[in-house]
Length: 316
Image (cartoon, one colour):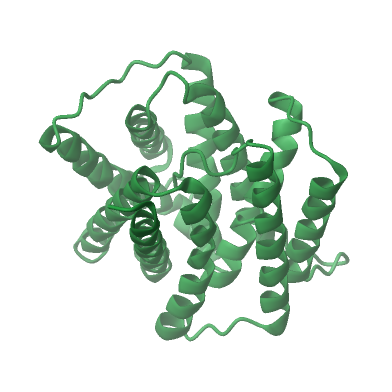
């Protein structure tokens, strides 16, 4: 197959992957009142792990759990786990489009962290793009500093944790392959979820009237006949999303297909509109445009300097 055809197929795969992620987010938003956060996290991850291991067995790929970077792997697992805990929490009170738009502030954090930990040189143009990108975040949040709801920062906290995870991935990918790192993320998420079950799974701390905090501290398995079919489907959808994304990056040029990850925002707008009747405000559209524009500029600067930090290993 010619490179242009590979890129076309890779773009299609990325679009499918992002569409699946938007569906997964919609399912979380749909069932959060009938499950606990870490019950959902556990079930989704357990199903995805089974599918990943089955795929590796079927394709006769070696399953290797050994890591050459034990400490960094632990830090990445923790950052990734709690980062997406923040994201799932945000879906209880925020539209899909807004949550995903704020999540895409992650390239700005990645660039900042790269200067600190990877000793990457960031010039004035990229610093300017980072500053402009955060203006987009500010516009979406529309803060009232006299009475600001700090819960709105949850997707931004997710973006920061994700950026830390991806910065670590830049270091560990030279010896740990992508499947090993994914299995570590899944096993770590399952282990941490079980710890939450031990200490909070009986609803010991569920003394809140706020639906968001109820979601975090709710007793596990209160409505399994309703919630778990969705959780299982969610795990399958997440696995399919990863399958499409990993295949996109394996057959096509990362410098082409990674740009289409921003389609997740478009899918989120469509999913939010058709399933939840959420219509983004003009401020959200303006902020999204600024974030995408700044993110694309940072990406192009990284590509020009051969420093592909943001998109080396797509994981979510």
